[in-house]
Length: 108
Image 1 (cartoon, rainbow, N blue to C red):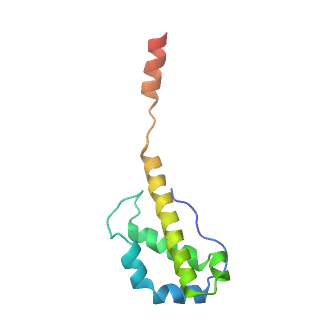
Image 2 (tube, rainbow, N blue to C red; image 1 turned 135 degrees about the vertical axis):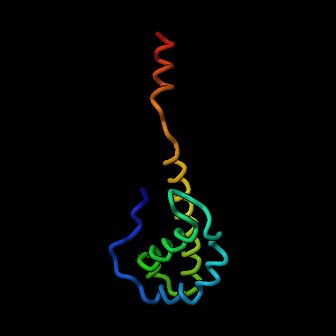
Image 3 (cartoon, rainbow, N blue to C red; image 1 turned 120 degrees about the vertical axis):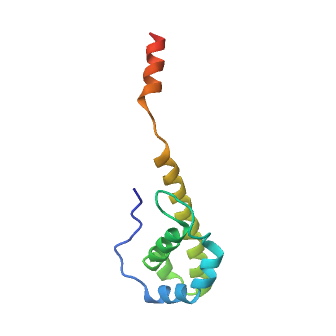
């Protein structure tokens, strides 16, 4: 289960163009490769999610400088990466009833 990060706002062509101009630099800086399995998500998936998120982000529309949009992209990437990894860890935690049941039986 992933989070729904997709806003129902219009895409910003300007923000998409700025991300496109700096795509290679951002990819080299942030994306740790095709490996990594976080609930069937890789670092490339996180990078792509960030692109989709940022071109629909209302905050990005208010920024006028390219550098500010790039900084926001990096910040959002770190946020989505953190959330994805934590969600993956949480999904792997399995709470079995047997240990709890065994403790209750021993207490009786």
